[in-house]
Image (tube, rainbow over all chains, first blue to last red):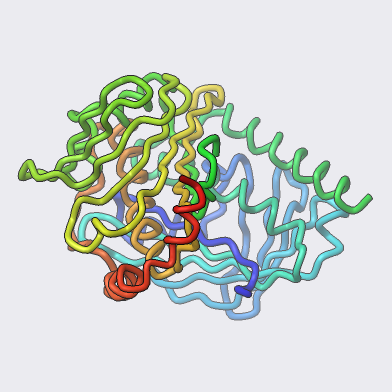
Length: 166
Length: 180
């Protein structure tokens, strides 16, 4: 049996440098990640925090920081108890320049079997990464409707995770 | 999947700042598909049972199938047979596009389903191609420009070997004969 993981690939018309900034600069993430601001000094082992409207939504620490190529951090969902009780998982971004575009592969893995977080991120990443691609290519992230959909997806994930636990 | 016997194996979701009508047009009109689908032009008879064809830039047939569901601008599904060398020996798959409006954006879900136990090595072709095709479709609708193809993207080598092996063994025979 293969290990539980989520993998998503997208292609973005940009440079690895610009995409790297989009992944590591809080002012940038806030624009496409529906208000989520990433913060870290990005040294090996340093804490990483994800805040939304000031509140901590997720946390982790830096595993790999190889500029313009690989970024990896542990990921512990903090915003709700049903997810908080799970141990941290791992997020890895791989950037491959391909001439005029960059192939971005996001792998979210290192889950325990039956992880509720894994179920939830399967809905979340495509929305976040689509918004990132839109922001870089057009100057505008996916609109407020995207934020509402992200919020609904979060609520649904919580409800689902609770239902499964009951 | 409303077509009996087909099991979803690859699902790709992408969100596009567009309308369901424009996404539908981008999926079904040749002027659009040639921009983002590796130069392929779509020829689709707009009805259930109609022909579903994708042609290569030089006019040769690439994909042929028939429309299974035609529900603009919400759902399109079609059988999908690759008309190329040993790919011709493989059973057809079923490709479905689901379009859901989401405020000012659209959620597009592509599902590739099979009637037999396809090895991952064969699925690898679609898993490599669809993210590129649909990322480029999103760029075409949002910016007017596709993702430029700057690298050659052919079928993975393991895929061709797996197809050769499958064609020799025909593991789908039992499944397909019982369905027919």
